[in-house]
Length: 466
Image (cartoon, one colour):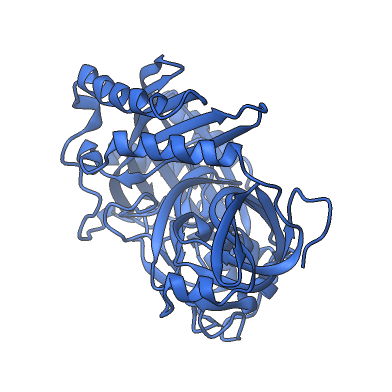
């Protein structure tokens, strides 16, 4: 990693033409993957990448550049070239670097990079075999573990210096089934954590493979799904995709500062039903989206976004926070040194309520239960969203019925928040990735089971059901 002496020289070079702020983001990443698919080792790899990103800011103007050539000549050239975006004389001196301290989370007990590959493959093969043995209709099993260890150093002209080691480790077990009519079904199990191989000690790969295979078979034989506006019960864990897409992105400071969100100026106002409290928390020890420090060197926080239906705060990075006159909440993130950072989610979830799962299901006369999700998208400026559920069950007269084919839920985030009228007590989180202007970053979504009084459902049935 870059020395303080060299960092000082680079930052002062960058500031010579009048920019008010300069920042170095130094990163080294080691990735290791072990993947089995189609009864063979599909991927067995270890890769190392490193580079430095440099950002300059003056008023509302930001310029960014990066390089994987870490020689001082290359870095000084980068600083000089970026400084040409401004005209003037140096007005800021780099302050003395002082390391930020905090109680560290996400400790690594057993680095995955050090584990015996032959033992890992044997563990995965056992699970793969168990999945195939469930039924002849299983046409593929994929089982794997991916780990990325990222060492990050941030130094800036305000004297901030932070170091963070981030080890994202994730396993996945996926099954694909084909029924006698040629229809396919796919099911997967994809838990993710911050930490080392010890995080996977309690995962039963064989059990996960069998369950994925059975679920894939069930999906391949699913009935047509209904269409129309109806009551919908959203499952816990991955059900948090709804809040992530419909409300999370519009609550990021980047969208707020650029007036691309329907939540601009709404702090202190009622934007959801009384039973909705939502949180973005980057401090959960071992959670997939957690960080010790964000990518501007700020300490991450537990940030209450909505409390009892009232908007409390946004997810704020330093750059957009200055535009808004708001303090950073430790929400600045980027995929790698190749990206300039901006406000992003970490572990974002709806807090637990008081209703039980059975109470929520029994309250629905006719509707669907969406247990799992495959992602979605939102336009923050309009708050219109859509997201797809690939594990769906009918609800009739307060009882769960047959599985049906995938559906798409369509709505307006501002409206949906007010239509959540029951919140369960079974909060759970799920690991995923989120893509935006600063690249793909690991995030967790989450919620308990919730009931929505009415939402547009796009199913496979040609007739509309109400």
